[in-house]
Length: 75
Image (cartoon, rainbow, N blue to C red):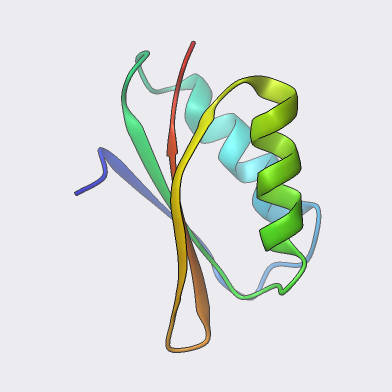
């Protein structure tokens, strides 16, 4: 279970990434953030975001038309 859940359903790029970036700032190093999004482009966006920021993309899957990402904040 994630330390924080971010509902980004219905938001288009780049809003899910921007909201996740803001949420990660409020989490301590090692904490996890679950993001729920409906934008199909979010898969590539979150992969790129994690590569660029160093945060870990722990998992991503689709659950009933919702993309679910779990990120670990690496500080």
